[in-house]
Each structure stands twice: as C-alpha cells, then as structure tokens.
Image (tube, rainbow, N blue to C red):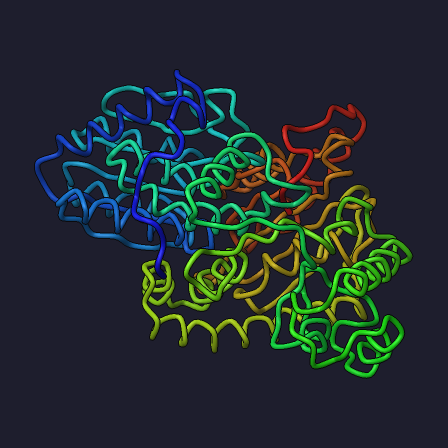
Length: 475
C-alpha cells in the first residue's frame, strides 16, 4: 500500500484533548525507556489485530524487541503465564481495562503495564506502573469514538510522528467495531478528517456494498443483511432490473441517479422488514478509500477480521502490514467466512431465538461466526424489542457468550457492560465489554443461572429506562 510519508496532520491535543494526550505521551515515554523485550497482547478480531499491526510497525520503527500474541480474551490462566514471564513491559490492546484485576498484580510485581483499550474499565487505576490509556477515563466515549486500534494509533503517534501513516489501520479497527454507523463521531471523526487532509484516505458517501459486481454485492450482502435479497440471486436480479442497474455493473461504477434509486429501494425494503431507521439508512455510508490501494477501509477490516476469527492471526497481522501474499490468502478466508455468516443468518431467519422476559437467546456450534450472528441478527433479523444472547460451547467444556443490543434498546436502558459482568460473576465466570456489545465465559453448568440473572438485570434496566453510554456504533 503506497501512501504519503508519515507526518503530523493533527496533534494529540486536537484529537483527544490535553489531559488525555499527556497520559498517552506518558505511556510512550515508558515504552521508550523500557530496556528489555516488550510483551504485546491483542484481541483476535478486526480491531485488536488492526491494533496489532500498528504496534508491530511502531515498535519496530522505535528499535524495540517485542513478542506479540493475539488471543481470544484475557483470563486468569493467561494472566498467570504473563506474570511468570516477568517482562519489563507489557502492552495490551483492545483488552485489559475489563481485566484490570488480573493485570494489576503483574504491575505490582515489577512489570510496567500499558493498557491501550476502549472497553468500559472496571478500575480507574492509572499510574506510572499501570498506565491505563482508555478514553472512558478522560471523557471520550470508547464505544462510539475510540477503539483499540485508534487508541494504539494515538500511542504510536506519541511514540513517533512518522507513525501517522498507520492511520488507515486505526480506521479499519473503528469500522470493525462499527463506529462508522451513522457517521464517525468525536475523536473518530477527527482522526478520519486528519487522515483525509493528509492524503491517506478519501471519504465519500456511497452504497454500503462490496463485491465483484452489483449482483454479487447484493446476493452476498451480510451487512446490511437484505431480507429476501441476500442469498437469492433471482430476487437480486429482479431488483436490479426494476431500478435499471446492470447485474454486471461494478460497485461504485453506476451513475448517481441509479445509485439513489437502488439505495431508496433497499432502505424501503429494510424499513418494511421492521429494521430500525438508523440501520436501514446505512445502505449508504461513509466509504473510506485507502490511498494507493484498491481496498476500502471496510474491505481491509474484513480481511483482517476473517483471518483472525478463523485462527490465522499471523495472516491478519501480515495483511495489516501490507503483505500482498497474505492479503490473497485472507481473501479466500473472507469468502468462506462471509458464506458461513450468510448461511447462519438464513438459518436463524427460519429458526428465531427463544425469548425470556427481556432477552432472546440462541445456540450455535460455530465459534467462528457466533458474535457476527448475534450482532447482525440483532439488527436485521430478530424481534427488535429483545436484546440478543448467543451461546457457543468452548473446548474446555464451558460456554462462550456474546450479548448484543441495538441503538433503540440502549436508549431504553440496556447496558450489557454491567449485565454481562454481573451475570457471569454470579456463576463464577467473567464478563464485560461495552453497553451494547459484551461477552462472557461461564462454566457449563452455569448457563441457566446466567440467563436467569442476565434476564432479570435487563428487565430492571428497561424498567429504569436510563440510556446507557452508547446510543450508536455496536452491535
């Protein structure tokens, strides 16, 4: 990917404000001063692996030796391993704030811990030994404005101004965490604007579709999932004929009147299916095109995400670093991933989740797509009055849980950052995350009790009716 050379196109103060900028600079100073190899832990999704790409490049440029591992969550077993390693400095990105209780003993034993996260913190600790770089601690909404990758980008910028050229990965992570829905906001918008001013990206409003041609884009569209169109080639052909668009036309290659006509039909289709207007209107979106690349930021995050979730985080990191061979491999993985998600959504459309008083839940054996099914199902398929819970069995015999709520549900009071954590605690598991997108790991025999407690908490949250922190973004 050829982009303009790194340069300062916005200061940290301009992007996130002075107090937060000073803490980011303190973290960068700690890394510069660290004498030994640095341990790096990132999450294995689009956001965490985009952050991983940023950290690999930034630490390499700084001449630092490091060992990076991508993980699916941070638990006591991993914390014990990290403690035994006794690294001089440990960096976590896209996780850590929700596991501060596991990382604090590592810091107290002598390792400097740097957390680059955006999940709701369970501790406000932030000191020279335990540097918690999280927007929530400085009035910046970590659900809507900053993600793990963009927080890592800010850290990289404090480390060296040349690292501004890593901004496409910050945007990739933000899109992976759906912070583009309804338009980028706050710090995210300022980062995108600075990237555009610097010539790293071009932003334009366009159809939120990707594919080899218009027919392919409609038939294979998972996000947005188009009821009656996704997975049905005959229906997609008929729709294109009715609006006068050739099936073989390139996405982005049709004229404005025809694009408007197609967008209007798709919005109407989604509204008729009962989709919230905010999501239906995402048929058109801010399309972020990467300078010097045929990919958009959305396509980049799709490659990174699918490779990471398919158990190939090294491929995902290589894609983030611009490796063409890895990108080709990731495209094949992404095609299979999209196919599995689409098949899963179509199956759930025919077999909806079961309902309790306040939440609805379903099971899937496929851990690869469980979170995607919960998030996309909540938006496009399921009863909009009920937030969604999915259960996937783990190799250890427990359950991996994903919880998702829509904007409207968040406005009515749902806060899964609280509900998932408390319900998991009640059965000896761990949970937490964002108000509208959280997860948990629980014992096998704790499932029924977990659901009972979670449902009761959400009933109480609905009764109070206090909007949670997030009113957009996730799921």
